[in-house]
Image (cartoon, rainbow, N blue to C red; front, side):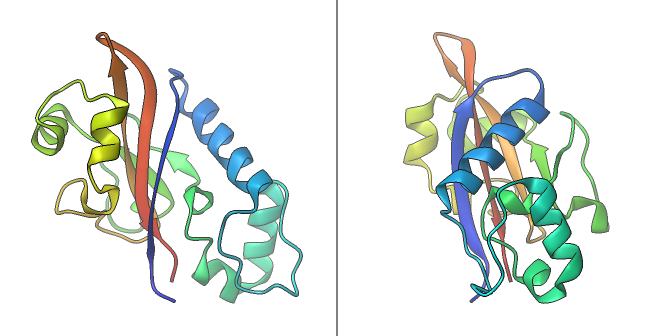
Length: 153
């Protein structure tokens, strides 16, 4: 099938576990994700998804081609390397935000006008199964996060 690009906008929270958990719940509830084996029941929680991936290597390797393939958010300024990048969202630094958007305070409209699959350093995340995030602003105040990446086999 190949890898898939994905993107989301989610309400702002200073705690990344809040907005990542929200995105996970929304995607799981919608059922709008790739599932490589329809004979295996789809999970309804991240805990179930993790258990299924541990039991079935093929499912784990194929992934869901969504934010469900992301398990953690690196703090701003932290750049994981090697295998540590897998399953991780990485914050763009100020220079990368300006380079990508032409401003250091992008809004949702600007984010949606850019093709997320071509965003970020070197166009796409360096490793499948990873992605980027950056705050989106309204009147100078962060109101949401833009989240995007590439995952799947």
